[in-house]
Image (cartoon, rainbow, N blue to C red; front, top):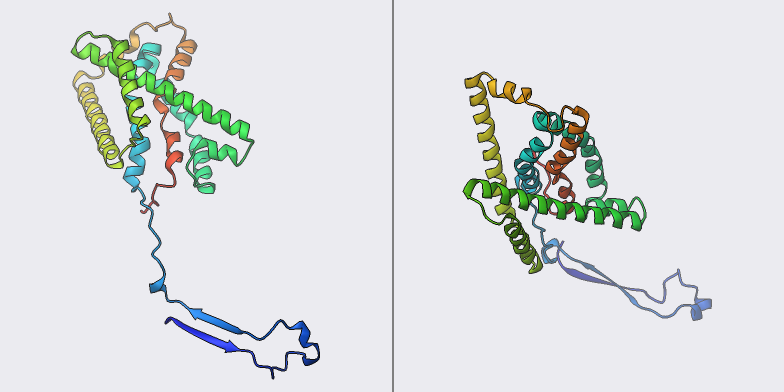
Length: 264
């Protein structure tokens, strides 16, 4: 349509007006009709969306990094039962996938668990869940920093593990305090590095198992359990520690508004 303005004037001879009750009519006027073309409308700003790989990388970094530093802790907690404990943890977490999928489809808003509970329960319950999430994030940060420092101390020589752990946490706290946010490009690069690291580890394990015929696996299985043969207790501690390696999947709901649509 072209921009144009049309005016329609109501005349006194209009039969729809009752001349005997003219005092009820406020006065004669005009009706203006304006047609506006789409080209003259202001452009709607398009919000930047993350690609599928970038959206996966942000939450995937938490998951894959957790696997890398949790494996050693789980082995120390339950010994050769570590694969079973981690498998049980994964199976217990799988049903939550449908719950988060339904919640994200019904309420595609940033905020994660807090927004979901805020719209389905009371504000007190939602605040309690958000507080538990913050505590879980803080505990995960402490465990990951301490594990990283312990591994570095074992590989490069002894140094004060506690002091370095506090320094790492303080450095990231300062960055967050000044409002520095994560970059999706950097997160994608780190995610790709994690994938390559796990692929190399899997390939090395497969080569070693083929070369030795599984002798190391048999030897590990024949070793005594950490708690003197109490399988149930060892699995419980191993399962509890394995949950640290599953943190990260719930963070996907915290940036769902920035996640782009999936295209096959």
